[in-house]
Length: 416
Image 1 (spheres, helix red, strand yellow):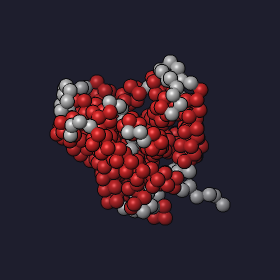
Image 2: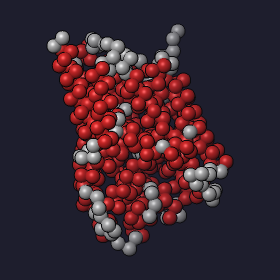
Image 3: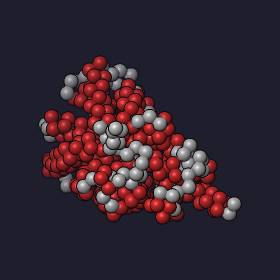
């Protein structure tokens, strides 16, 4: 008897596979607990005063929530993963492009996340010197151990992701918030006064652009998780609330770290407050939740391309990400940020195709072709525009161009 695929790699999630509302909220909240977002918080604190910081969070958060919320709704209503949605909107062979793009970026961020854990711990716990040109063997051991643990939990799929989220989300949120409050109370000035210090050379629009760019790439994978929600409404609201709460906490942690402790994230704040072991715990759990989701997404994408099982591709992705982790951290963050602009065009095409053919999706009668070249062109041209045009919001620029290309294609094909 064939074993049930609890991750529904190549089919819609049925009623039996749906998770509780709380489980979905925890998974989505854990997804947004992304350490690199703290770096963005630091940039926002350096360039904006307190009210500008809040305005950028609100504006960027609204746009990000609208994008991810739409994808969350689609994933929950259809029960389909990003890759299965792409097979319908890009074609069976055309879906290889978005699957490769999402897999490449998420495996890259998985590797970066491992190094983001190993390098600070090697420096602070072991007192080792780590530079772009040198990583002591103990640091590599930390990377390998973390890589094995995170790959193992991603291997077991949505069930394991849910368990990790139930553990990590409350711990990171509570301990991080306590540390942030302690840092503010220990400072010489209040939050508003501290934010006012230094050169403020970042506008609210630019700040909102940083907020959007911080997670618009990973947010494109939202259907991979919300397809397990009990209803479309649950998929929508768990995504919107999780992105607002999770992202806001990460930005606040990074901002407070910067203005009160001069560090990059809450890990350094907690070290300065002599909360060393709690700092390691928070750092590890924070990275684990996002890394698990990233590797799970990478496994699904590569499974769509190769035809091999998700579990097999998670192992392969984990090995690649672990072996390349240190190199990725020092050499590839810039490239990954460029690639972040390539995924919103994918998301907008999935959204447009779904709502233009919603009844066919729900009836499972969507005509599937091999390649939709207009969808492919939309992603390629949209990605180029997003990376080269500096006016406005890069992600939105890319989405607008991709949408225009796709809609022209739909009109042309309809008139044939």
